[in-house]
Length: 166
Image (cartoon, rainbow, N blue to C red; front, side, top):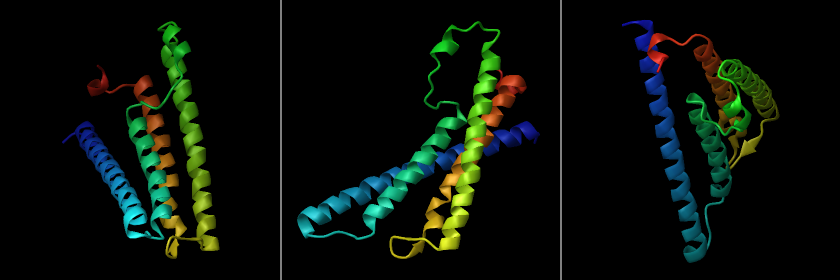
């Protein structure tokens, strides 16, 4: 198997894992929030940890969604000027935008990692006494993955592999 074939298979596996995680998290959020509503309105109470857990799930869902959007360069973009630029300079502008995005994501990953270290040091707890950093690991992982993906977009703009040319 060629390296290109292996990379394609790994990319497909990563996409599938992200998509499945997104579906599981969204379904879990909907079910948990619905059950909380039923408990509060009809049973009289609710799970004390559920609201905080739902907030953490929103964080995970948001970052996994951003990672999924970054894999195909489908993030929200204001590219009005890019549409009217001459075709000759469009790739250069795209490279600059991807490098900027990658740099910002890299910085966010770095400082998220520092934040996780502080959370470990101060032993911050969430819900029923679980370490907060377990749930916050998505921050450096998500931003780190987006940093790498946008560097990949730079590489594809500069040097597309034969199977990437459409």
